[in-house]
Structure formats: C-alpha cells, structure tokens
Image 1 (cartoon, rainbow, N blue to C red):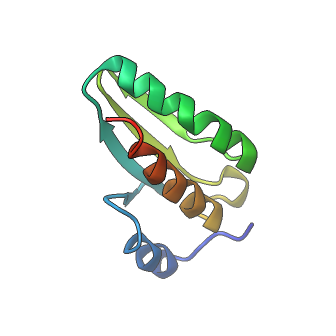
Image 2: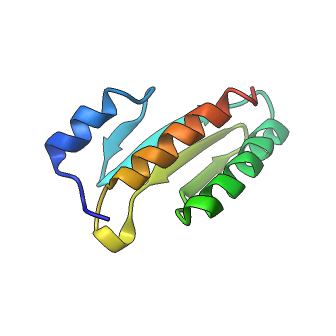
Amino acid sequence: MNKLSEDEIRNKLKNLNNWEYKDNKLVKEFKFNTFDDLIDFLKLIQPVADSLDHHPDVHIYYNRVIIELTTHDAGGITDLDFKLAEKIDDLSTHVR
C-alpha cells in the first residue's frame, strides 16, 4: 500500500464527512447520547476493521470517541485509511 501525498489526502478529504488530517492521521470525533451507544458503535467497527486487517486508534471520553487512522507500514495515510473512514461513517448512522 502506497503512502498518499499531501495533495492526494486533501483532495480525498473532500469526500469524507468532517474528517480532518492532523499529525499524519485521519481524525474524527463522534459523539453519542450514552457510553453504551459509544460501545455499540465500536462493536460495529471491530468486524469491519478485522476484515480489512486495518485497525483504528481509539480514544474514549465517556460519550465521545476520537478515531485516528494511519497506515503504520506505509508511514502515513493510504487508500486503506480512506476506505475504513468511509465504512466507519456508514456505521455511525446505525448508532446515535
């Protein structure tokens, strides 16, 4: 998997909903009504991440979670990060 250039990343970000490019990662915060809703969301992400063999960094703060994506083997952002970001966005509509 090839690392994307800054221009490629910024161009692809236009197709994502509220993801940011920070510190060589794709980053998004999701907010939920309850901690249980947040955990349900993470349980939805787990099989998708496993199927892609690509796992996010997750930071939990009661009813909000910050998801960070990067491809460590490539040393930056790849198409795989964008693919997982899209899938995570789709999953977020199932829990709120």
